[in-house]
Every structure is written in C-alpha cells, then in structure tokens.
Length: 246
Length: 256
Ligand SMILES: Nc1ncnc2c1ncn2[C@@H]1O[C@H](COP(=O)(O)OP(=O)(O)OP(=O)(O)O)[C@@H](O)[C@H]1O
Ligand SMILES: [Mg+2]
Image (cartoon, rainbow over all chains, first blue to last red; front, side, top):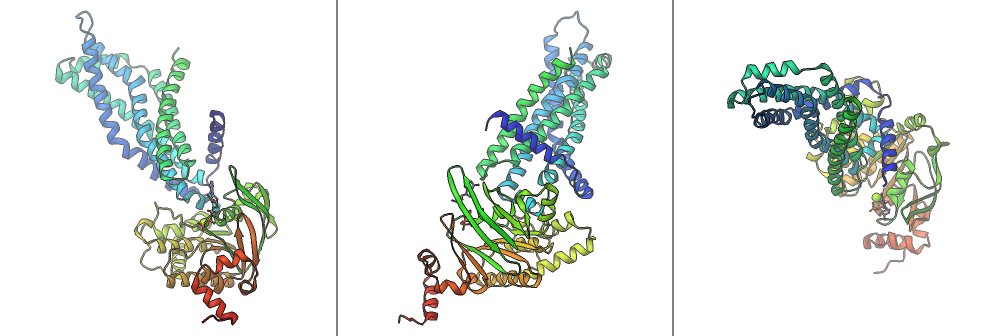
C-alpha cells in the first residue's frame, strides 16, 4: 500500500471513529476503563524514566559547566527548562509509544484476526467508534497528565541527585529552576503532548484495526505501530518547534 | 426472505464466487454445503455485508443491502444474528457479557431484564454455570453455543450460522441443530446455515444449495438428493460410507 492510500484509509478510519457514540453510557464505561489501562498502568514506567532523566541531565550539565565563572544555579535552570520543553514530552511519549502503542495495536489486531471486529459490525455496532474512540479520548486526557507528572519527577530527580552528589545544592537548583520558568514553555510542551497523544493512539489503532489475517501479522502491526508513531512524534516535534518557537 | 443474485467475489486473481443465485425462505432451514474452501464462508460474509461482492445483489425482504444508507444498514443489521465459524466471542468479556452485548448496545432494557434474557438464551443452548467464565476458560463446543446464544439474544429475523456443529460431539451437535430448527420455525426466522454435516443436512435441511468451484452446482430439498443425478453432489454426499449405505438401503437396491 502506498503512502497516500494508507493516509486516506487512516482518515476514513478517523471519520468512522469520530461519529457520535450510539450509547453514551457505554462510552463512559469504556472511557474509564481505557483511562486506567493507558494511564494508571503506565505510571510506573513513566516515573522510573523521569527520575533518571532528571538525575542524568543534572550530572551531565554539571560536568559540562566546569567553569567557576558561572553560577551553579544555572544547572537547575537548564535541567528544568529542557525537561519541560523537550525531555518529558518527547522521551516519555516515545516510551509510551512503545508501551501504549503496542498494546493498542495488539489488542485491536487480535480482535481483527479472531473476527471479533466483524462480529461487532454484523450486529450493527460501529466497531471503530466503540473500540477506538475511547482509546483516543483517554489518551488525550491521561497522557498529558502523565507528562506533567513526568516533568515534576524529572525535576525532582535532578534536584535530589544534585544535592546527593554535591553537584549543585538544592537551594541553588531551585532558584535556577524558578528563575527560568516561563509559562509559554509549558504551554508549548502541552501542545506537543496533545499532538503526541493523538499520534500514539490513532496511529496504533489504525495499525491494529487493519491488521492482516494471522497472529504473525498482529505482531507486525504492533511493531509498525511503535515505529510509525515514534517517527511521527519526532517529526512533529521538529515541526512544532519550527512553527511555534521561532 | 433473502434473495441473492449473481454474487461474484474474488481475492486478487482468485475467483472464489463466480455468480451465485439463491432464495432463502423465512421459517426454513436453508443450508449451504460444499467442500472445504468452496466459498461457503465467503458467500455468507457477502450476504451479511462483511465482504462486498464485486457483482450481484443481496435483498433482505426487498431491501437491497449494498445500496442501503449507513443508518438503514445499521438498523437492518440489528435484525441479523450470526454465528461465526470460530465463534468470534469477545475475549475481554465474560460469557454473560458476550450474550448481553447486543442487548446493551441496542435496547433500553434494565439490568434485570438483560440478565433474564441472557440466562434464557444460555439455557436454550444448554449452558449452565458458565456465566462468569471467560471465553478462553471454556471448551470450543461451549464457545460455539455461547456464539449461538449471542446471535439469538436480539431475536433476529435473519440467522446465519457458519458450521454450527463442527467440532461438537454428536449429542451436542444434535441439540444445536434441533435448537436452530426450533427457533427458525417458532419465530419464522430466515436461517442460513453452512455445514459439512450430512446428518444435519438430511435431517433438518429444508432447502439445500451445493457450492462447487465457485458456482451453485445443485439446489433442492433433502429428499431430492437421493434422486439427483449429479455426479459431484453424489460424490460429496456419499463420501461417507455409512450415509451411502443408508441411502442405498432406502432406495431398495441393497448390496449385501
Ligand atoms: N480474505 C481472504 N483473502 C484471500 N482469499 C480468501 C479470503 N477469504 C477466503 N479466501 C479464499 O476463498 C476460498 C473459500 O474460502 P471459504 O472460507 O469461504 O471456504 P469454506 O467453504 O468456508 O471452507 P470451510 O468449509 O473449510 O470453512 C478459499 O480458497 C480461501 O483461500
Ligand atoms: Mg468456512
């Protein structure tokens, strides 16, 4: 399938997904379920990578700034700024593309090859609306929450390790971090995060929903989901930076 | 009543259906027979609209399925119940939730009414004490019966069963056949059934359509099979020696 027809069928699937759900109550139940599956179950991994990102970037920054001419608080400024601007939204989203994306693709792909999606369609249920809409909506809601948590934990990790290793004292770190905080940076990070959340959930859903006929194909669909959403995340990261940070 | 005319379907270069006509009457057991790979499942999926044939019409009591608008299709589909060859149960839901699914989606019934209906349907397919089990915790034959219970939960006007009794022990197979027949006659359901099982064809079939090589090779009632002078049909039917003997005995030209 060439790129254009793939993009076409992706749009058709989105169109099918975003029709009004037949049963509001059923939709809410699915949404809560997906929020839990996507959000709560990713909390652990997001927490771990965030703490390490913060810690490592504090050590790296301290190592690079060996001069006595600069104040130590600049380390706090750099770590918190890059965390909010880039590390948390992008790295955490890439990790989530691996976890959430492959999950979504495998689940939908499995339903496709075992004809569960066909079974829904025969009954007259809009399978895309029923299965995919709650996933995308939940992603748009919980992934940004995860990223905000990630920002906090990452800065905490940097602050903590700075103090433990003596690279930068906790007070200096915090004064640097506070001094550099700009609301626009945070808003921009959130715009990125929403974009990434949509990419992860919709691209993976597309791959799973149209998975071919066998278990091997489901595996391939899941791999494609991760690869394509990761590449698209990086690509749109660049595009948004170009558009909104100039 | 369902009428199909000139159904053609191919996958790539491979022509699976080469123009099939047929009429499936309501209140009757309409059976589609044919060898493995002859296109029974593909034909059924064309009729219910899971596959779009390149050519041909499918009429549900005068409604041309492939010309209906999305909304009308959705309405019509709520009148269709289908049992898939491999059951296609929702594996994230319990048995009970599987059967309740169409009811939850399309009716305004209360929890209590839904649960009554679910138990009624499960009871009809002789399933007890499995309500809270998941599909991977029950046997293949039980899954099939859950599939039937799900298909009949909305009291469908049109019932499609893709090999309802393959993989079942003879007793359960008999029970399932009887059940489908009862439902068909009781509610005047238009039932279309794919099968390999000659016993069920001869015992319960009303109208039989024999597929061979992408075409309708023969059509008629079970009683006509004996008299049919169709080599391929005979080969298919008499593949089983026991049935052959039974038939030839019936005809009077006993070998012995
Ligand atoms: N999605 C598909 N893509 C390509 N070929 C297909 C597809 N579905 C079915 N076929 C082909 O169509 C032919 C008919 O398949 P079908 O499943 O209808 O057979 P069947 O009569 O139901 O057989 P069985 O009794 O074993 O279930 C087979 O040769 C199969 O390879
Ligand atoms: Mg089949």
